[in-house]
Length: 109
Image 1 (cartoon, rainbow, N blue to C red):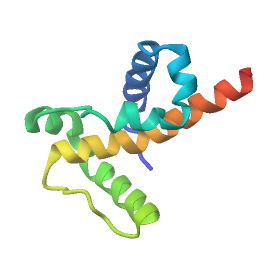
Image 2 (cartoon, rainbow, N blue to C red; image 1 turned 135 degrees about the vertical axis):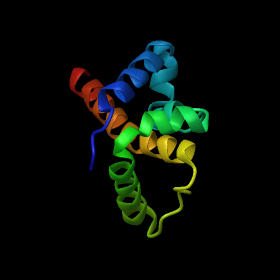
Image 3 (cartoon, rainbow, N blue to C red; image 1 turned 90 degrees about the vertical axis):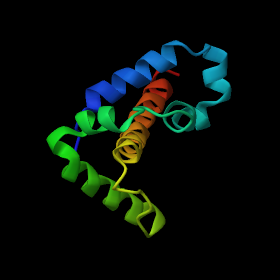
């Protein structure tokens, strides 16, 4: 799996989590990934999405195909829509970022 723009996506999550109330985080710990990476678009606009994908687009598509086949048994993302490709990729990378964050919380507790 590609780690393209991992640090950028992680920074997005860190900024988002800083804006949340600590009690809200505790109450919604199981849904952090959904709230951060699935309730709004990471990139809006075809032009911006194409720029963001850059020359990594085929690696990103491969990551999405592998993820969706492993998790859903089929591929559903519309690869003709750069916005959907970016947002699905960020969703996938976001899973690992949120998992790491939750593991860190458990280590501190």
